[in-house]
Image 1 (cartoon, rainbow, N blue to C red):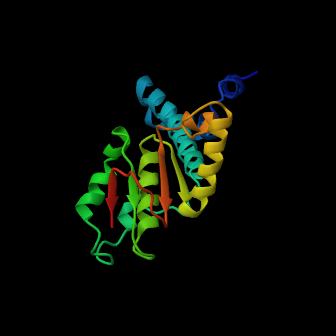
Image 2: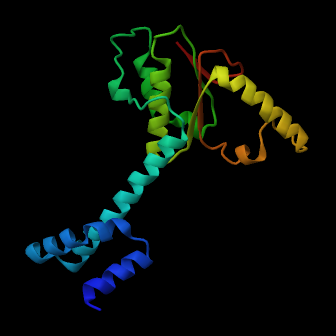
Length: 186
């Protein structure tokens, strides 16, 4: 067995698929550039770390059930002058997550509530938080199910036990009014 074959076997054993996929290019680049060993190792490991981060983000975005992916940069504040851009910039910091505050976006249809909620979720996911998007229409029946399941399990939180472990993330609701909120805008 050649050194390259043993290397591929080791990469497969360690589940380093991204390095394995780029191995030929990495070795060719190293032979041409003759980098220091530490630089070659950094480039090689960065290949795997970048691929894993991309898979993590893709999975988190799928689990968030976002209706589409939009960012804050795509939001047109000129189209909706009633939105306080400074307040949106503050929300982008995600301070409300660390303070365990709620954000509820209220307003008539077509003013950008969903876009901003999706952008907040995307920002949160990029920073390592969990996020989940749900319409208010879906929230009411789900809340009833959660409440019933919490009561049946002997709990009083109104959350199913498997959901209460995910409380450190973000949940977004649209098209409705939910009371006892810490932050409200629109």
